[in-house]
Amino acid sequence: MIYYLFTLQLSGWEFLAFILAYFLAVAFAFSAHEFSHAVVANWCGDKTAKSLGRMSLNPFKHIDGFGLFSFLLVGFGWAKPVPVNPLHFRNYKKGIRLVSSSGVITNFVLGIIFSCLYFFISPLLNSGNVFFIFLEFFLMIASTVNFSLALFNILPIYPLDGFNFLASFLKPDNKFLQFMYRYGSIILLVIIILPIFDLFYYYVVGGVESLFFDLWRLF
Image 1: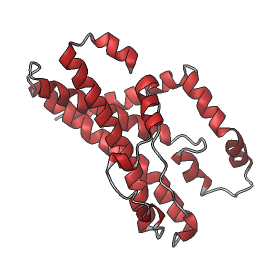
Image 2: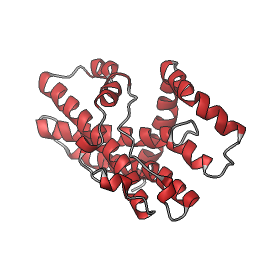
Image 3: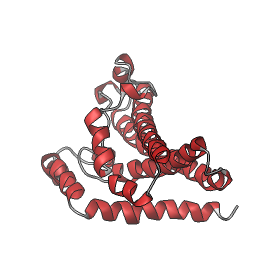
């Protein structure tokens, strides 16, 4: 993100508008993701997140300061995970699948909405107006961040949502599950440190965004 800022060559007000838009877009994407986990867990019978005040879109309920700062620096971050007790689910496996997929689906739908708004609204904005500059940045960043969260979280790597979803179909002694429980966090760290994350971001996230922009051009 910092490298991207240097490439934009923004003026003082534009720089502040970008920073504000970035933080708000990231905070909203994280909050929506965790909020959806809490809501679906509550629907499935687990009141843990609700009792702790996590069934809220208030970003202060969900944001992890270090995770947000990490997202600012390297484009990868995290929120405070919503506490879920699957033993309270009316249907154990179905509950895990619904809760695990809810965050991904929420971010993907938001990515579609924001990409549509950015495509159709940004050409109409007066670039000389600070608020319009902020709005254009917000829609652009919100689209990218939500697609990023959705696509990254579907990876079947512990402790991501994609792993939890897959684990609900496998036996507890499955070798892949045991391997991921032991090494998943290390694999994630390697993906982030090495250019793998940059390639994922550029080709996968960028490809999905381009796909939807091509779709919006049909209208």
